[in-house]
Amino acid sequence: MRHARRGRLHIPLLAFAAACGPGDAVGPGLFVPDLIGTAPVPLSESNEVALLADERTACVIDSYEGQVRCVNGEGAVVGAFGREGEGPGEFGEPTYLTRGEAGTVGVVDSDLGRFTVFGPSGAYVSEVMLPKVFQPFPSFGTSASGVSLDYMVMLGRMSGSLMTRYEVDLASGEVVREEGSPPGPWDIECGQVIHGIPDAAGGWAFVACEGHLIFVGDTGPATVFRAPMYVPELPDERDVARLEDMLRGFNRQRGFPISQGVEEQLESYRATPKNYYLSAGEQLFDDANRYWIATQRDQHEWSWLDVYENAEYLGSVRVRDRLRAFDLLGSTLVVLVDRQVGPDDGDGIPDRALDWYDIADLPFAR
Image 1: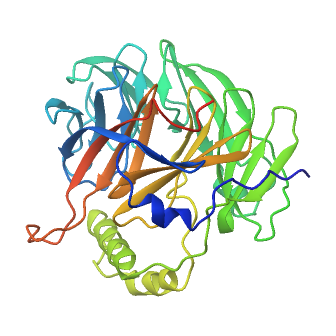
Image 2 (image 1 turned 90 degrees about the vertical axis):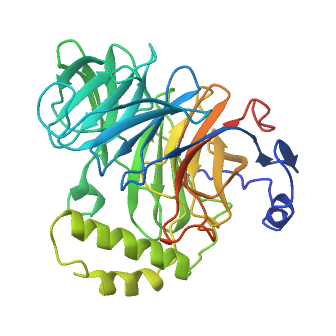
């Protein structure tokens, strides 16, 4: 087992980075990109965002209205479309978004098991039934690709591949590719591997417990290490309050008593260090095959994305407010955020927004 070299960044530099302005690079590995656009979006229980091919339009899911909403960096609504139903252009449960090469947006509906393509203004283009609902990759062409998680493997009740990669032809609905991820096992003391995605070169990256990452090459050798910027950190009361709101919303949406199981889960959450990764789905490989992952570091005034290349930590990108999801294409990064609650927020609920950043001058790009 070979181990990656540790990153070139020391944690004390973070305090210095927080004082720096947009477009600044601080030391070998900290970058605060220029903010180039912003747009408000509705409150939602969905943390999905897709940056479309023009790099100026981004789409989110409005879970309360059962719609997809697309906006641009000037704050204008390009389109708001979809409604509850089973007909063309309707949704049972819109779950994932992905961009098309022709400026379109694809929507994975987990309830109907369907992949539907729209123009950004909402014009219906096409649809195809999915043989298995999967989390799609950031973009699609004549076929849509993504990964599906085997929960039984993750829980250690079965052996084999944790993830399965699918590719579905959008004209016929046929599965043209199906393959499992490398099965391991890998040397991780805490034991649990959570989720993984493939890269463009045939390898895979996995997130695991207690800040561990696993990078597996196309020929099988694995690099296992703890993320250099991971520090075990217990949730604070703002974190707890946000989880409480989410749990109550989950109960309300499913018709359960609002407080059912909430206190027990909050007690466990308070005593458990936060994960390194923000959520299993908030990781991707960019056009240069660099691995980006949204972290839970800080997450109040600022949020951080860590970037890796060839299993080596390159540095971190800082964005404002509480990041919930991100996408990137070319020189543009878009993030879905919860704004900080200000004195004008009488309901105490953070507003939601999309922020666009220019990452053309990413100092650790190669």
